[in-house]
Amino acid sequence: MSKKMYNKEQVVAGLVIFVALVSFPFWYNFGKAAPAPTLELTKEAKAAKVCVRPTEYMKAEHMQLLDVWRDTVVREGKRIYVNEAGKAFNMSLSNTCLDCHSNKAEFCDRCHNYASVDPYCYDCHIDNPKETK
Amino acid sequence: MESSRRKFLKVAGISAVGMSVGTRPVLDALAATGGEHGEIKSPEMVKAENALSAVHWGMVIDTRKLQTAADLEPLIEACHSIHNVPHHELKRQEIKWIWETEFQHAFPGTGTQYLNEAAQHRPFLVLCNHCQNPPCVRACPTKATFQREDGLVLMDFHRCIGCRFCMAACPFGARSFNFRDPRPFIPEINKKFPTRSKGVVEKCNFCAERLAEGKMPACVEASKGAIAFGDLDNPESEVRKLLKENYAIRRKETLGTEPSVYYIV
Picture 1 (cartoon, rainbow over the protein chains, first blue to last red):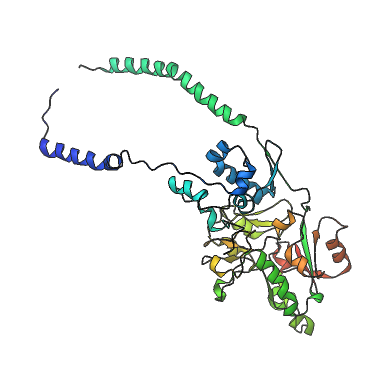
Picture 2: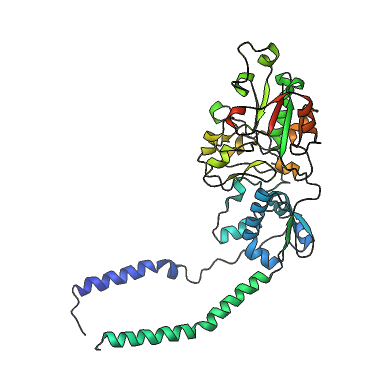
């Protein structure tokens, strides 16, 4: 059962240093979690009350929804989205989503920065159709 | 602890049985949540009621009504401004959806040695031909460029990897590559239409976004009747009537790409 371990001191010291280094981000940041971002809705968004789909769905799945939208618009030429309530929307990121949520910095970016995602939608799609710059 | 093959196999066998029985409820639970997911009523996606449709979209350009460069200018401007086409000073970085060229470049092999004056000096309006047999679509390795059911040859910029095979394949030079970020070079951004990004190819889209809301292409609207647009498949359409009454030619007919843009000369 017991076998001799060679260079025991060095090996154990090395292991301790290794574990300490690997776990550094965890114990260094322990208890310092950034608060979840608070989003600001524009007047239009507040007045509309509901988005294209229920808020919970939009929070979790807006990227999948946009992905389906882009394929359907580009490939099939279908541009109108009729939701469960029977309301019709133009399937357009710039002209529908960002027309209502025209505060990208306080709405989109806060969550995206918090989650450390960098969607490249805005490389092409104009982020605020109403803004005059 | 003494270990033997016999003992190991016994333990392994029992654990396999145990796992298949024990994990059953867990798997069922997972499957159930998946099912719940699918039960969300899926909303519908449809075309707008006023969208224009055709079996095969085509264009007839009456070059007799577009005699000078000044006649073509507003048409090109109309297209390039609504589609956020950048203006680069360097010719080799130029982006063009619709532009003018001379007869011998538009129709090589069509003219005779002594071409009449009118044809020789008249500028010709050229754009993507939305070929029925598009070589660019065959060349594209990612299916970023594709042919829609109504004959439009379109680009899905999300999928373009910028390999430029389509540019090599297109015999009409209708495609341009964004060597730089186009945004700083767009004179006035149309906020309703997206721009492109560096590293993608772009070209005329026969105003697919306008047809979807019941409008004619921008160049047709700006041409004051010099360009007709309609369904080439319908013998009663305006384009077919024009082709019946006038002698029209297409670009590089012999290549067999079957362009959808006709020129009355």
